Amino acid sequence: MADDKESSAVPVSPPVNDGGTANLAAPPVHDDAKVTKTKSSGPQTTEELPTPETCRKIEDYQVLDREGKKHSFKSVYDGPSSADRVVVIFIRHFFCGSCQEYLITLSKAIQPEGLLKLPTSTSIAIVGCGDPGLIDSYASRTGCQFPIYADPTQKLYEDLGMVSNLAMGPQPGYIRKSMLRVIGESVVQSLKQIPSGLALKGGPSNQNGGEIIYESAGEGQPKQMTWCHRMTTTRDHIEVDELVKVLDPSQQYFQNPQE
Image (cartoon, rainbow, N blue to C red; front, side):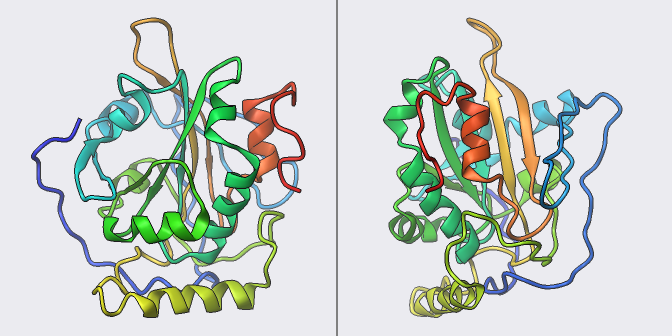
């Protein structure tokens, strides 16, 4: 439910660089964190869950919807009408062509109605780190049918241990275009927002994201975070077919997710 607390505005950096050589900052490791397996190929990524204290802390952080209305983060994954399992995908800045390619591939492979038919009913929500005024154009470019929110303060990213860097890493399967084209389209999108005053409000160009999953802990119990993946580079979202395996190990509900 939206509340009346004011969110603090922070300056953001130009959002058009999808590559670079900045140092890699590893997310924090906690003694009581649950550790899952790392990916067997591609950039190695730590999968430690945040501490229970952190999970409780971020419940009340504010995210903004397309109209700029405020919602608690908990309402995104544990609202009264939410599915039993919710995947929250944290994207990079709203002009990032790599993340747009990810959501285009994801939206073609996974439909909201298909997620609800899984043995554990599932939904997906997207969180970006820029101005909410860019959400509508972002959804239009990607064909994303999932709700999109904005965290322009990057507080969620910070406390969840999301990495900040400009390292590109290997090109993943979800990107079908050349990087020259991806970056060029990102620049054009930014320039088109000059009249709206949002050209420099897509979000920090070095802020990476990741994916987390919340699941029901039983009737009447709050959802718990059970799985996470933090991007280690600007092109390190979990591959769509790998995410499908996490959600549908039997492979009965999604076929050829990344073709």
